[in-house]
Length: 302
Image (tube, rainbow, N blue to C red; front, side, top):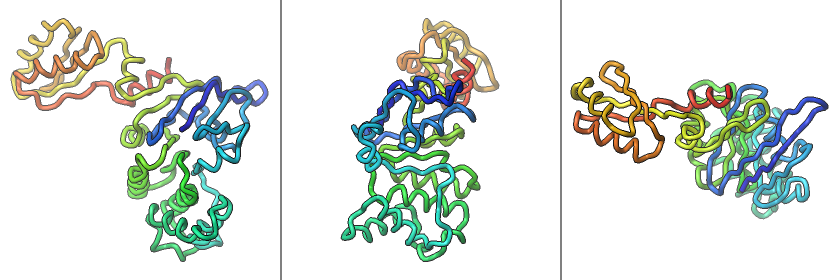
């Protein structure tokens, strides 16, 4: 549903986006990660037709954003980091205005507005002025305008930026509700958000895509020696000795009652073999020792 190939954007001598390629499949939630200045917002602006590329191609639902911009934009809803809202309008009037701009037909416009307000849980404040709303509600209004024309693709730029923890949780619940109903691309620098919301991530650094995939795929790309952290009920020393004798295990380190097991290979069969051996010592938990934060740091440093 989103196809980006060799996307480049230059500002004179500055290369803000440098030959970036990635794709997002139908119904998938993709996270676009990177430190400030990595090129995330520039990439999203090009995807949404707000900014032209220097070179490369972008297709939204099969439509080239340069060759067929109207068709591409019709298939897409965009929530910028700072949504441009008309503060003197009521919530309902603003969402209705967005529907008109999106050419939603007169006969279905009222029901489209109702559905967008229901999806974003704004029914109770639909008669209030946008300017009187909290930051969290204003973000929801921005999301409602992005959804009102029922786009197949949703692009969200830092959707929880500036929200307090309660408001962030509410926005994440809304995005979870849209899983599978829309193809979603989320730009964020919050790794916990990417972990909880995204099926896959693409990591940008210095305008380039330096890694892409699920957490397991990132480990395979970025870690020469993946590791697993296990917790057991039995004797850690005995368990460590048993694991060290396994062909797929490179090293075992003690951390209290937990063991950090370095594997010679990142294949699922190696992890299964370690878990099977640890089960004899009362395996309580097993998880990768390198989370998304460690993988992110490795990717941007490479």
